[in-house]
Structure formats: C-alpha cells, structure tokens
Image (cartoon, rainbow, N blue to C red):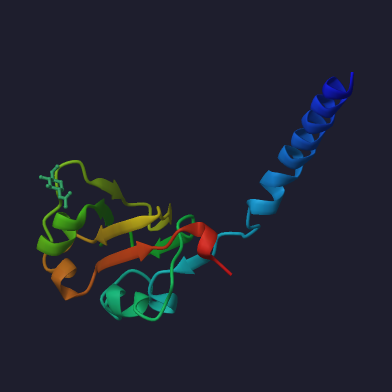
Length: 136
Ligand SMILES: *[C@@H]1O[C@H](CO)[C@@H](O)[C@H](O)[C@H]1NC(C)=O
C-alpha cells in the first residue's frame, strides 16, 4: 500500500516535471531579419562579407537579398563554391529580386553569378550562424 502510493507520487512528480520542462528550456526568441547590403542591397556597392562582418547571426535568422532580377541573381552554394566563385554541383539559384533565405546553424554560403566577375567584385557572402539557443 505504502509502496504503491509512493510510486503514484513519483509518477505524478514526473508528469509535473515533464509538463514544465519544455517551456523551461526553450528560449523564446524570434528570428532577426536582415537586408543584405542594407539600402544598397545585393550588389557591388558594399562587399557582402564586409556588410556581414560586424553582425552576429543565428540559425533561423532571415536574410533578404534585394537586387534587379534582370541583371543579377543569387546562388546558395557550399564552401567550395564560395571560395572559388564557381557554383558547385547542386547549387540553388534564386532570381526573384527579393529572395528571403532562412539561414541554418553553421556555414551558409551565397554568391552572385549572373554578371561575370560580380562574385569576385563582392557579391559573395559567408555566414557562420551560431546555435539559436545562444541568442539573447
Ligand atoms: C561542394 O559541392 C561539390 C559538388 O557536390 C563537392 O565536390 C565539394 O566537395 C563540396 N564542397 C564542400 C566544402 O562541401
């Protein structure tokens, strides 16, 4: 009798703990949205890596790439594509002129390629996004 009520008490306790645990461990944060290049957008006015250099990014943050879709585009590449300015196999092309990309935790690489030389001219962006839980 005593043993079974102790069991019941433990079961109740575990239920209570598991009810509160997710809320207690989850940081409530909303992703930050950035316009790449600020008012200049995704072009050669500001090298994108320079634009990013004073910012801290987290997985889940959103980048907006703005540009003239008739002149430029934006490719999501891997580190090799970023370093060589040559789109790697499996790159993803965006060309709406207003592309919203949610960055992942870890390395995120973007280049522009529609105009020859634009990648080397500054339309390349490498972001190492920190874990979302580190925010605030
Ligand atoms: C990038 O993708 C290419 C093609 O799939 C692959 O050969 C290369 O190793 C990749 N680079 C990295 C750093 O993953």
